[in-house]
Image 1 (cartoon, helix red, strand yellow):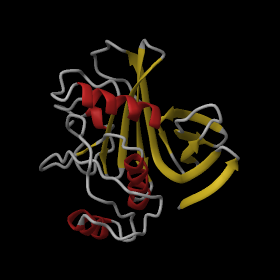
Image 2 (tube, rainbow, N blue to C red):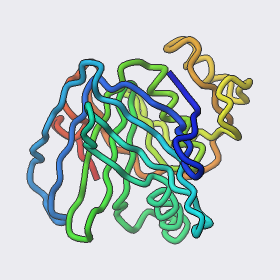
Image 3 (cartoon, helix red, strand yellow):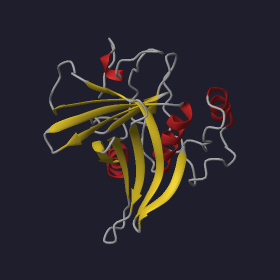
Image 4 (cartoon, helix red, strand yellow):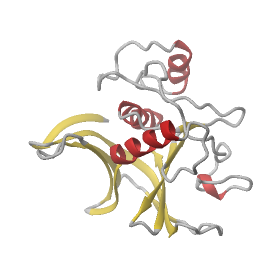
Length: 223
């Protein structure tokens, strides 16, 4: 359900993806206790919209992720802004000496994000996509803006940032092992090129088939 459309002269809709569930929580920055999550189950009425917004006075475009249920906006974040900040942090602290304030972790069919808000709080949310194809479409968009994320499996974490050179997701991939994996899991899913960026530290994820947020499992942490 990937789509391109122009909502306004400076706004381009990149994708509109159905969510099976949206979970979120907001805590003070220094909060270290167990997290209390709010869960919203989707019945075809929760949509994740990725938009590219180029303001006339700004040289850097925004890539907005907006979560909408019916007519209500549940979440809105400029992923490009935080991706640029994360990239600067990775290059300035190559040994990982600084704790990342912006974190993205992925495991099909879920994508989890942590980011700072209003200078005093940390916002966390998790998306569970309705299909593997939608999940991989979201990953392709993150890769396109060089957004660092951690992809993890139960056996061995993989710290690879996948990139694509255009919004044409049907082009041949130059990473055969990954393409074979995508073809096996989700036929017709977007293809990606070789990884080119460093990743944020690996984070433990939920066990296969789990319905709880990624941070709710014993021995895991959402940085």
